[in-house]
Image 1: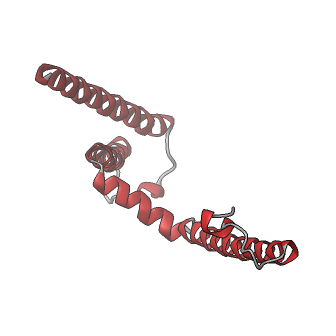
Image 2: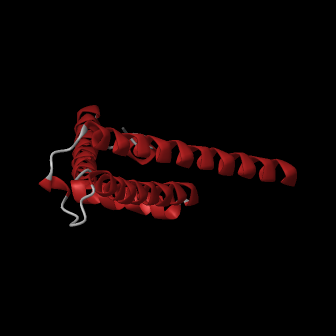
Length: 144
């Protein structure tokens, strides 16, 4: 890519072969600068794609975006609630007071109940999320 300053009119004392040599040299310098820039951009890209940087960037986006932050909090609460309810229900079904779930083989019912509970919690959270979204849309529509 030749810039306008490099294409200055030919000096009257400069022969065509000297001008050609000078322009070739300028183009080679531009090409070297472009290659160096490309290498630097490639290394920056590789650095940004390391697992640590990916996690940091995702976390940064979640923290900056109120919608993503809200969804992350809802997901964490849902996971924690599911784990708690599943553990509690399994203990109650088995009648295991010691809290050691693995001490007895799981019955068919105790295998199904955690799945049902997870499904119900997911449905409730989705319904709550849809209600909030609808309320937000209604609020924003009323502001217009």
